[in-house]
Length: 148
Image 1 (cartoon, rainbow, N blue to C red):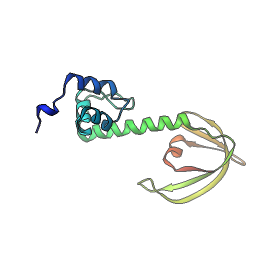
Image 2: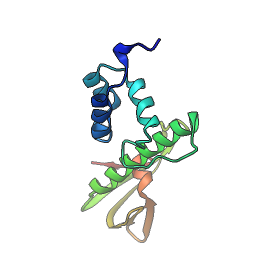
Image 3: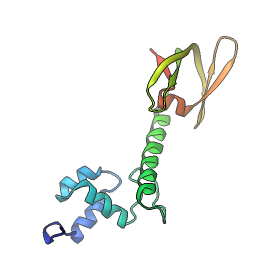
Image 4: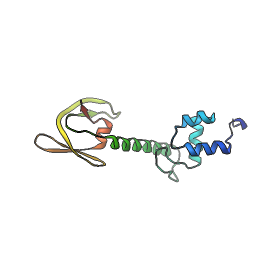
């Protein structure tokens, strides 16, 4: 039941808008004495968009919108991973076989190589007798891991 006690004031709305991209729904909710679900619903109704830099897409509703929000979050995490990706020198890389839940089921092969170039989406390794390229997402998901 909706009561005056949990009604949105102009100050609440301004706080939400100001902190939408910097704070989680839980953090905003604690500040406003509202649930994270209430924060999410209000943010959606105000068309504030993804918390991590995406934009609100008109006509996306319900489960599709929740999936869109998740995709925005993963895209932001992948972007952060790319920005922080830095391997120098020679490393042992392990190619893993991941199941549909992203769990490692077995080691497929192990290679020794040196990262010779990286782009936004591709990492190229110089192996003993050849070069091999992998997607940045393969490192992000754990399909390829680096043995230290």
